[in-house]
Length: 358
Ligand code: DCP
Ligand code: CA
Ligand code: CA
Image 1 (cartoon, protein in one colour):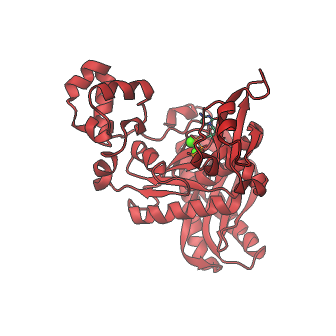
Image 2 (cartoon, helix red, strand yellow):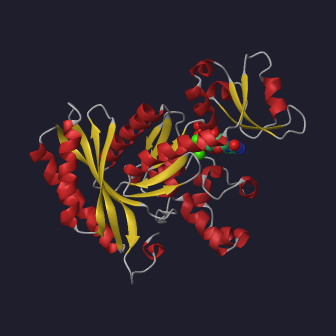
Image 3 (cartoon, helix red, strand yellow):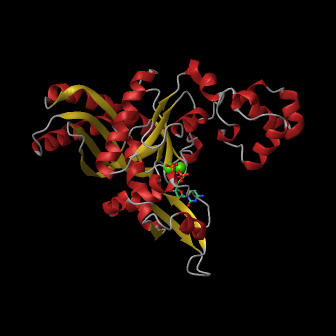
């Protein structure tokens, strides 16, 4: 899956001040040379419909919107960064692997937890969109596809508040009519060069002679374009940041408060988490459980032990106790449960963490 937040900076501003929603809103990077010099960072969709887009001069935007009761605000990176971190934490919890794209987007690997079924992936995507809206008040767009290349294009396909699922047998049909500039790696210049060859759509590129492509762009890039146009991409997710936690989450068969239904799942997750830590040569001191309740609220309970451990029995024992504490704090049923370990110490004689990532 690729998830991208809609009109991100502008949506953050609307979230802080909902009255802005009914007006064209322009978030600006002021250069300071004159009061109005600088460029448009992004805008809400009302302003977009009137023709104001990222990157144009603020003065141009002001001209276009002069009779539109528009609002112009300066960028507030600290605030957007904070919102971004909150959203990424939610998104990360849904993936077996996570790769952050830009400030407002990320890839997650979900194939394992949806057992390779795209219908389940669609349900999961809807859930993620719902939780991001519920917890952070933001609309997002998600693309679900067999690989990163296609997922990224799919998340952009129906914006805002979009969800596009592209199954393996639909990939070529989905890509073919799209402008070639939608492919990752095809910028303005490349798009123009391809245009000179009569290539306008991704379908045109897919049918274009690969030898000729390699001749124009060099072998590596030529091959890449040839494959990309067919939706071929097998690049794994790269987990850039050093790991500071390991977690596993599962959705229960049905919402329940019955420990005899929850504990076996929790124990399975505890074992998986401990094995993953073992594999990465990590010992930990903190064990947490995460409960997502029937109202989609997220609750965590944590405990820190005196000595570093990676014993699955310890994780199981603590998780079960924490489950009881979590249940005692609410009358609601649990929908999903997770186990997380953190506060790592690297076991001696082990390889560097990065040896195991990516
Ligand atoms: N951004 C920027 N200047 C640009 C493009 C983007 O400052 N030329 C910033 C503002 C955007 C954020 O990065 O809010 C994310 O960029 P996106 O390309 O994802 O665009 P938006 O989120 O604004 O809109 P969309 O709804 O199309 O995703
Ligand atoms: Ca975005
Ligand atoms: Ca983006």
